[in-house]
Amino acid sequence: MSKKISQEELQKIVASVPMLSTCASQLLHVTAKEDHELIDVIDLVRNDANLTARALKVVNSASFSLVNKITSIDRAVSYLGERIVVGVALGDCAGKLFEKELSGYEAKDGSLWRHDLRTAIASREVALQGGMDISPALAFTAGLLHDIGKALISDYLDGSVADAVEIVSTKNELNYLDAEKELVGFDHTQAGYELAKAWQLPEELAEVILHHHEPSKAKDEFKPLVYAVHLGDNIAMLGGGGTGSDSMRYQLDNAYTDFIKITPNTLATVMLNVDIEFTKLESSLNHSGGGN
Image (cartoon, rainbow, N blue to C red):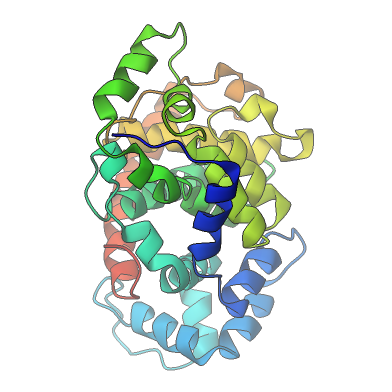
């Protein structure tokens, strides 16, 4: 059965989650800046021995099928790109959180990581092909983090899936957040936002975590990014990459068309690209210690 969480209890849950490494935190802040360059990412990775080793292991994995082994971190980061490097860093720091079984959503371990990865890829594709003036790499990072709050409240929803579905079914609007709030006192976006504050994430990433199901509530300067992840999240669920009982139980905000210029044909291309890229990245990031 579900259990109500007080604000004090939520803060204790957040406090129990390991902090991001200094390098991972710096990477998130650097890559959130529009004027950063790849050398900024390389310098950060170069100064973290563990991340350097992980990045070299990923780039030389079978997923990339390189003819010649890469031994230089400069070349490794240049080849992988910042989005994969950020994914490796997050997997190292918060892998257990991403991998945990979401019993409250009747989802197996690894489901959260796979959904977040699909959403990240889809959000990047939306940014690239939707005529958006936002960083595709930032959209990828935001997609990776958007549902992190589910890992915090899942245990408190355990055994209440039937109740949650009934609550959503009796509402006029499709929104699983209503069920989470009624059953445990907080929804996963609010829980994730508290963790974002504890991790001192850049404001744009925190806004995505808080508003990815209700993007119209985001601050104006962050709405394009939030809408990109909102659509990316829906694309991930449409492709069968959800997190269990809440999949496709959220309202699509059709105002995304004010920010994203995407046709049905383009959307079909995006979904195909997501499947192709997901297969490659899931395998390569599993080599890094992230994923399931």
